[in-house]
Every structure is written in structure tokens, then in C-alpha cells.
Amino acid sequence: MYHFFTDQNAVYDDHIEITGADFNHITHVLRMKKGEEITIGIIGSTKEYLCRIDAFEADRVLCLILDQQTVSTELPSKITLFQGLPKADKMELIIQKAVELGAAKIVPVAMARSVVKLDDKKAASKVVRWQGISEAAAKQSKRGIIPVVSAPLSFSEAIKEAGNYDHILVPYEDARGFAHTREVLKSLKSGESIAVFIGPEGGFAPTEIEKARESGAEILTLGKRILRTETAGLVALSLIMAELEE
Image 1 (cartoon, helix red, strand yellow):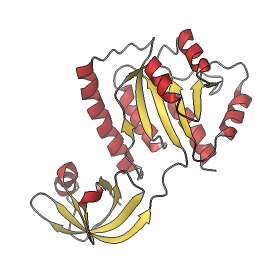
Image 2: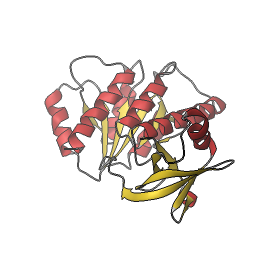
Image 3: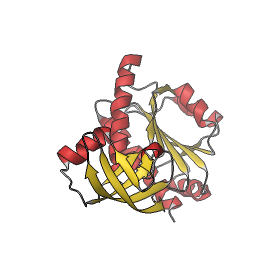
């Protein structure tokens, strides 16, 4: 069943209207018909509606509400992925998979060893595209929210923002091994906020690790193998998801 998002102001008594890009997608791409059922999530809330397409108009689809429920697909804790800016289109894959794995927010971070440099104009254009990828992934995985992809931050700005979280996790070289990683994961509790920092292709600079430690970050390992930047964040999110969903 296809899943879409809309604003609360699109809900009218027993109907919900879908307009804009989703109207075009339903009408011209999916070629859906009157009587077909879809689910519609309300942006910024945990509401989800089971609906039946009731009518097609010039610029909107009217959907009859059949049932309302609270979304149960969200993790019990808010996880933000602070991702060191990678090369090429790797960020698109990272965003897509991070959304599927339950991240509530993705923050691109310009780090000391990031090869990619974005000026304000390029960054704004990238964020629009990245947000579209987040929305598409949220629909596909039937998320209750559309995770926000923020404008890129410097490492100093990112670690300062992460200071407001309950936990800061930084996968890096950790002599204590995976036993320590297990201890950290076991310490995570429902309702807490978790910041996960992932370095770019060249990894973290020593000064960045020092700043992270000074901010109270837990330095941990993801195993004995060296992981690519587009893999490391997804492994970290998977481990956290598995722990929280128990």
C-alpha cells in the first residue's frame, strides 16, 4: 500500500486532500484509480490515516478517511546522524538508508578531512535535493515523520549542537574493543536523544576527536574492519536500532 504525507490543514472532516507533487505522482505516475486505498501520515504528528481515493479533481485528490491510528514505526529515541561530508553522491545513499533505519535528523558536517567544499548557494541546492530523498525514503519505509536534513555545519557547530543530546557516540579507534561498544549500547534508554558522528573518507582529525571527548562523547568501535564512511553510519544506526527495538 502506498504511503504519503500531508499537513494537518489538508484534513477536512472525513476527507483528506492531496495536492502538489504527490497529486501528480498518484495521477500520472502511479495511475491510481478511485477506490484504491492508501495511508497518509500527518507531518509533525504521530497521526496516520487509512484512506480510500474518493475523487480526482483538477489539482487535487480527495481521499475518504476509513480509519485513524497512531504511527508505531518510529524508534523510541531521537537519533541524529552527524555525517562528515563525503564525496560524489554518497550522501544521497547515506540519507536514504539512515531514514530507513530510523534516524530522526541528518546533519551534513564539513570536517577537517572532508574533500567536498560547499558554498552557501551549492549547499542550499543540495539540501533541497537531500530533503526530497529523505521524504521519498520516509514514504517507502512508512515512517511517521519526514526526517529533516539540515544545512551543513562546521564540526565546531555540530559538536556544540550535539551538546544538547543525552548521548554523543563517535565510532573511532577504541582500544577497549567491542565489549565497550556493547556497554554503551546497553546504556541507551527510550526517550533519550542520541547524536552519532561519522567521519568523512579521510576519517576524523585528531583535534576533532579531542573536541568530541571534551564534549562528553563516547568513543567506540564498530568492529575490527575498516568501514567506508557510507557504511559506518548505517552500521551504527543498525546497532542502535536493534538495541532500542528490543
